[in-house]
Length: 257
Ligand code: DAK
Image (cartoon, rainbow, N blue to C red; front, side, top):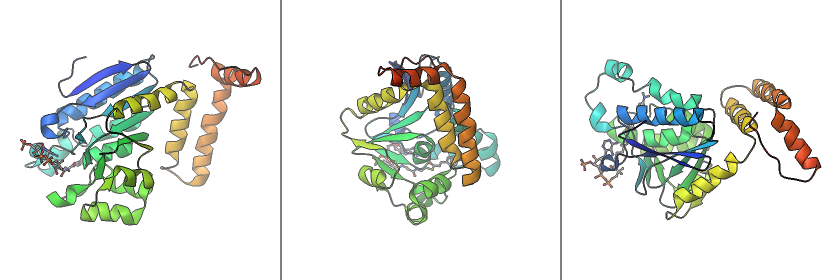
């Protein structure tokens, strides 16, 4: 598949999608959103790949939705031109998605990062929800996911007063998993992803699903969701292999089934 606004690459067991509209700070136009999700879905189906990375360039992960494209839109166009439901496609990806962020992650760019499962930030990464400065509010989950992740007051400051977070602040407040030097930040993300890719694939999938349930429901229902994902793993070859390998003091050889 050839794309015009994203680049794709496979390194080992990791599928990488690079946002590629540098002339617009990787702002998401409708085409790039669709190509991004098409590429992620293709990697999600590819059996040789176990973890996904989305990245941008050193200066910008993504500066949000394309303001020039949506400036004159009516509410009906916002709904009908495919700008809304496309964002939900990230929730259907089963494999872990890691955002490798350098430079700006603003507006929809920050919201996309919040939709990923883990975040590797370069020292230059900056996260923000500047929609207030152009007369709107976040529309792709920023108010909800940020509030759940970093708490209400800081979210208010970001959303209402355009406070940006540095990479180290993102780490401190739980938005980033690691901060790494700008040089080689993608390699660091690939190494991080490869470690995840070396785990038992079905267990990784079930674990991702169970953790996400924590953001959807009560503790009681969440604990039930966890059990629903725990027990079926005892029907996998990898559970037998993993436990036998522990007993035999050797490395497990995962089959993904
Ligand atoms: N859209 C379009 N073009 C953009 C852009 C954007 N978001 N961000 C940057 N660009 C373009 C600039 O216009 C400029 O283009 P030319 O003038 O050269 O043609 C080029 O990228 C370089 O940008 P700058 O010259 O501004 O570069 P600087 O280094 O000075 O500044 C910056 C970088 C990222 C700080 C700055 O460009 C900036 O503030 N950009 C806008 C950030 C922003 O306001 N983002 C929020 C956009 S609103 C929804 C889903 C999603 C959304 C809403 C609803 N639904 C599902 C309902 C999302 C909304 C948003 O993200």
